[in-house]
Each structure stands twice: as structure tokens, then as C-alpha cells.
View 1 (tube, rainbow, N blue to C red):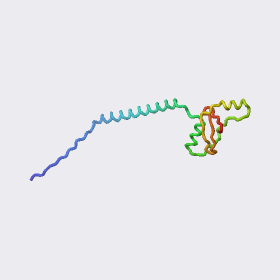
View 2: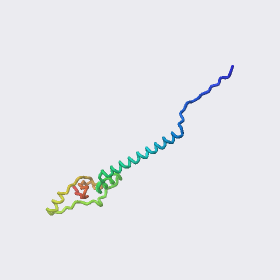
View 3: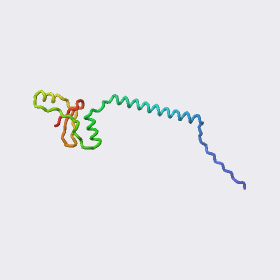
View 4: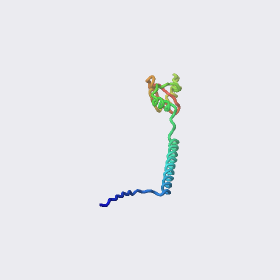
Length: 119
């Protein structure tokens, strides 16, 4: 009996070194271009979208933090008994409403002027 010799060869692909370099550089350039494109799109989007007004920022900050709302810094629309002043208050356009988290009272606000009127 003669001994049996078994050889096992595995086939695998080994790329040339220049190919690895080209593939790595191309991938890095692609990622760099995508990052640049994303930053340009986000900058353009930030220019198009209006910045939130101070009242909206305060309400958003209070809702995010979950803290008791403070009415410091909020202006209340003037209330006087003269007919001229009353008509000027009535002519204000209040484009939002909210509820004070501390007192529970509801109020209207104007995001452009910051004016408030308690209900």
C-alpha cells in the first residue's frame, strides 16, 4: 500500500495593490462629496425656513425642559378703558394661543410683536 497524499487548495481573489488604493481614494472622495452636499442643503434649508420668534422659542423651551413656565419676559397687550386704546388692542392680530403651565390660564400671542392677551 502506498500512502495517499491529499492536497486541498482554496481559490480566493487577491486584488492588485493599485486597485485597493484606487478603491479607497474613490470611496473617501465620495464620502467627502456627500458630506459637502448635505451641508449645502442644510444651509439652504436653514435660510428658507423662518427662525422661530421669541415667544415660540420660550414655549418650545418650556415644553422641552418640562419646567414650570415663567411669565417673565412676556408682554401682555395693554388694557386701557379708552375707546381708542381698546380699538388698537382689538386690531392686533393674535396668531397663536397657549396655556401658562404655572397658572393654567390661556392666552393669545402675536409671534411678530410678542404681544400677549390673557383670556
